Amino acid sequence: MRALLKPVQRWVWGDAARRGLRLLRFSEVEADGGRDLVRAAELTSDPRLRKLYLRHAGDERRHADIFRTRALELLRAHPPAAGEAPQRDWLAPGERGLDDVEIGPGGDAPLLAFLHLSEANAARDFAVYRDAVGADDATRAVFERILRDEVFHMNYTKRELERVSPARAKGLIWRARLKRVWKAYLRFAVGLAGIIGGVILTLQYFILLPPFAWISKRAARREAQGWVELPADAGQDLRGQY
Ligand SMILES: [Fe+2]
Ligand SMILES: [Fe+2]
Image 1 (cartoon, protein in one colour):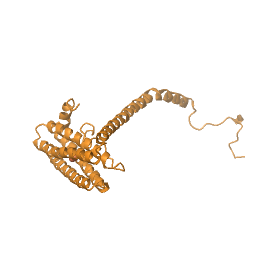
Image 2 (cartoon, helix red, strand yellow):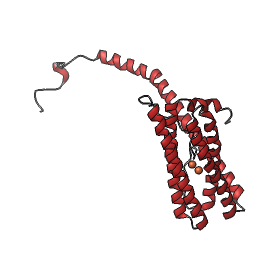
Image 3 (cartoon, protein in one colour):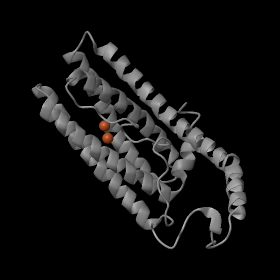
Image 4 (cartoon, protein in one colour):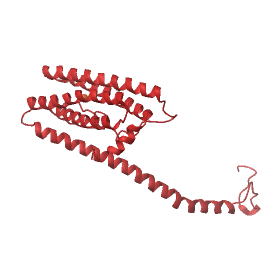
């Protein structure tokens, strides 16, 4: 799938202004991921994990700064056209893909499984983006540098998952994978429902509305214009209330 999307990625990353906007978006995703990990460090009761989460949070914070610095360099050199926005996230997702980290009562093991999957995806995606940026060596170096950290994140989360929950590690990774697929399906279904809803409303507008408009126009033509005097035998005396 990633190989098939390579031409799309070359298009996404081909334009310098678009590249800048996308990196700015990545910077937000990384900073958000860093905050989630600080929260995970607060909640865990495992001192080793707390240390690792805090280091991980520091890495994500640094990634946010690196992406932002490069984004601003690109945007200063190639200002985007007025109103230009980055493409939709699903075309080139950042580190967490399109999913948010769920930090809750489930404990460290499900979180580690989720983190392992999203870090593995990030490592694969960033390798594709690195190859798609064309002659932009500075942006390629940014991806190269961040990619090394993502590989470390991918490996430590798996190792720690196998330490804290050796019997359930594989099952939890599968569960996290299925959850990602389910969420992707829900996003697709919501998007499709939006398109179908738009088409049906447009058809209704052009097919159902014209007959009603025609009927009401015809009825309006039959109505007398302005104030009309009632005939004397109408049974109502309009000179007074009684
Ligand atoms: Fe990162
Ligand atoms: Fe990461």
